[in-house]
Image (tube, rainbow, N blue to C red):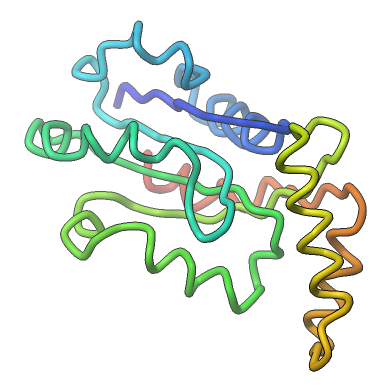
Length: 174
């Protein structure tokens, strides 16, 4: 099966997962901004990865516009979202369930990979928003233990990537 991984990464976590997938499968790995040069019809499987923020996957509309034609052509479509939340966080499945319509869910396999935060590589707006979110959680009157733990966690850079999160993606590609 001829496959390609196309990814969008701001701070490097999605790039890391895209490269791991490419290494494990021997497929091409292309940065989204270079994808216009790619003829997707030449591939049996298209894997799209990007970072997960505020309940959505950045740049996902690029793939969503192509889902009808790619699925009609029998292409396997896989999306992985890389987020700062631990995979076991209760918010992850709730947010992930809202990414695709019911029809799209039948055409696309969706996976979550925990990533991390790298404040040094974030753009100014993202860094500001994350710091504000951390402060809002920390100062919340009725903050739960989970809120407090999350506020502490996102107050600094961290990396919680793990190759185990690509295993179901690799299995889907085989």
